[in-house]
Image (cartoon, rainbow, N blue to C red; front, side, top):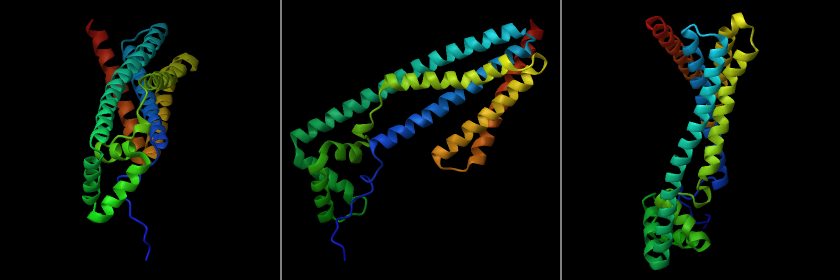
Length: 239
C-alpha cells in the first residue's frame, strides 16, 4: 500500500498561467461576439430606415469605434475593481500568516478535513504545502484566489478593445466589399458565419456541445438584426 499522502482537490488545479490564458481566450471570444452583433444590429437598424450606403457605413464605423472604447473602458473599471479586491484579500491573508501562522495552519487543515481527509493527514498535508508556498496555498484554499493569476486591468482593457474591433470589422467589411444591390444579404450571411464560428470556439473552450452554442449564437444575431431593422423601419416611417 502506498504511503503517499493524499492531497485535497482544492490544491490540484491548473497553473495560474493556464487559467489566465483560458480567461483571456474566453474574454476575446465574448468581445468579438459583442462587436459582431452590436455593429450588425446598428447596420440593419439604419438600413431599415432606408438610409443611403454612405450613411450606413458612417453609422457602422462610429458603432465600432464607440463600442470598442466602451468595452475597453468598462473592462478596465471591472477588472481594476476585481484586482483591488483580490489584492486586498491577499494582503490580509499575508498579514494573518505573519501574525499567527499556527492558527492559519489549523484553518487550512480543517478545510482539508471538510473535503474528506482525516485529521492527522490533513495537518500533515497543510504543513507540507505551507512549507513550499504558504500564501499561495492559503489563498487558493481559503479565498479561491490564485496569486499568480491576478489580472492586469490595462491588458484586459486592450484585449477587449481589440476583440470588439475585430468582431465589428466583419459586418463593416462585408458592407464595404459586397455588391451594392446585395450588400445587406452578404452582410447578414457574413454575420451568421461569424456568429457560428464564435459559438463553436466558445463551446470548445467550455468543453460543451458545439451545436447548441452555435444555434444560440446564430439565433441571437439574427434576432438582433431583425429587431433593429424593424425598429429602424418603423421609426423612419413615423418621422
